[in-house]
Image 1 (cartoon, rainbow, N blue to C red):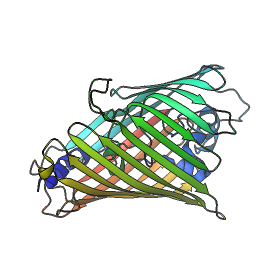
Image 2 (image 1 turned 180 degrees about the vertical axis):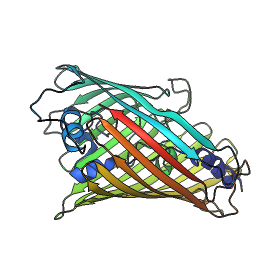
Image 3 (image 1 turned 180 degrees about the horizontal axis):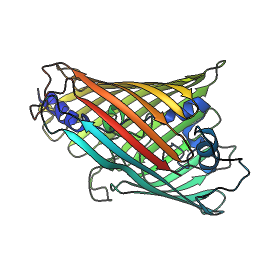
Length: 380
């Protein structure tokens, strides 16, 4: 079946992926939206004043900075209306190829992003994120008065969809919005965040992987995400739904997903499931195949002590629901440690499980593939 070949081509990109670290768990523990700590209303990227001055210096590390009233050794606030920030992740990856192919034993820069945010007025700002791998987000942000909770975002950015993990090669990211830099596009986004509820919707060009910033097709892509947060007793709970539709000249893709975050005491759970359909529309309609896929992500973390998490993860991807064998499962165990302010260290071991008869287009088996990743993280 043609769908099976396409699905295995996708997996070829995803098998050797970077270490996963789901930072939305911090929002889950706080019972807050990701925008509580980030400038971007949909989360990720540069931290806002609370994120950089309070959370990452005093609440996150095992050995926090001094009193909140003491001046910082280094301040990212250039002046009252201009701030900078950064995320640098340096990775060591060990991956023996049990089923054939080239083994990996390498250091490499997983991420090096520099952020800038300029407050142009009481309600307007300009956000710039430049990365060494060619990934960039640049947008203008206009906010209504706080009581209204409305905002407008115009520029180039990642459309809202699902859990915004910092591992963009997780199945739930790579198969929906894609991997950077192909996961961002020229777009317009509007959102509303009244209290415990938030809704984000975007219209984008839909040609993520083209070099031209201009849309040379007649179609647009759309995506949306809605989330509600609750606190039944001691549990902090958030549930959300997402949708995405994108039509390009050669392909049509639709995705529908649901996710949940829950935190109780020292334990935090993140989960997402996405159903996708892709169709090659470059061929006559009578010969078109629709490939249905199902991907899931689960992570359970335990805060052993301040700044130190033990994490268990489970991912699965059925790359063609109508063909067999096309399902792969990836299990992981790891730790993440923030010893002092603005410094993190993580270690994760993962193993991939698949039907022994499942092979990639290159002839490689994936069952039993494993990897070990060590990531040094510096940020401000």
